[in-house]
Image (tube, rainbow, N blue to C red; front, side, top):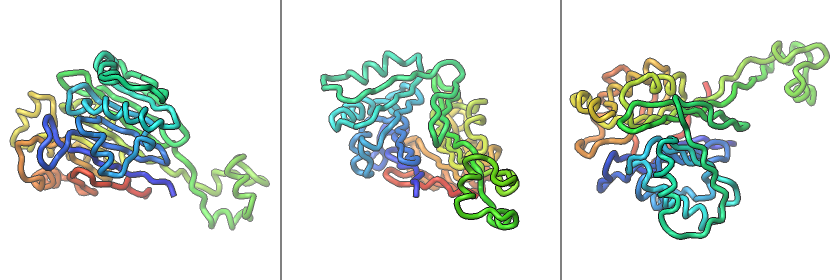
Amino acid sequence: MSVRELVVLGTASQVPTRHRNHNGYVLLWDGEGILFDPGEGTQRQMLRAGVAAHDLNRICVTHFHGDHSLGVAGVVQRINLDRVPHPVTAHYPASGRRFFERLRYATAYKETVKLTEEPVAGTGAVLARTGSYVLEARRLSHPVESYGYRLVEPDGRRMLPERLAERGVSGPDVGRLQREGSVGGVTLDEVSEVRRGQRFAFVMDTRLCAGVHELAEGCDMLVIESTFVDEDETLAGEHGHLTAGQAARVAVEAGVRHLVLTHFSQRYDDPAVFERQARAAGFEGELTVARDLMRVPVPKRR
């Protein structure tokens, strides 16, 4: 069975605390690993969480503030030290290419792995197509250029046993029907229905903007910053961030199934306040207030 889950490495905004590391999130998806926003200390958090450099296929940086990118240097060097046997691709805002290059070559080491840089520019676009997902990006609203990321699994087909039986299709003919589209005058549409692909979005530092809503639309899981509580909404807007209530309302409007709140300001001692405010904003689905080193499964298909 394929594994689809989020591994939370760090959940602090701006500075780490005694209980929260700088940002870091790994999405495990059908044998691939995508590392989002590796902040300082990510390499050690990976060790504690049971994530190896070999698990990583992509690195996606939303923007070049330190709490989202200072860990790039250590992760890149660990990928090379461990001689990861497959290529790794890095996505980041094109305007920050000089920062990525400085982090990539922060110290001397031997390059043993092909690391391809594919910067994101403009309003965002399709970044990659694989057999199990399409990776997209959208521009966000923050004091520096920032992008959110979205994975969309292609729609598939769900075979309907009762309709197969009615039309006398069984055994190897079922596989032929799926591959070829018709068998003995029976079409695939007659005996199956669309199986909607899963959707995942990662939204970090941003004010409310069109990109936030586009990324969140119809997601099975939305990982989104909620740096501030609602009482500090003005402060959040001034610094290019969201509150717990704003994040939750985005999720409600987008039809999100599982909402993961993270990137919490060190000014708040009680993480339960983020859950209370998200519920007060009307979100009724699965809700996780992220903690370092937790694993959150992507919801099963409906």
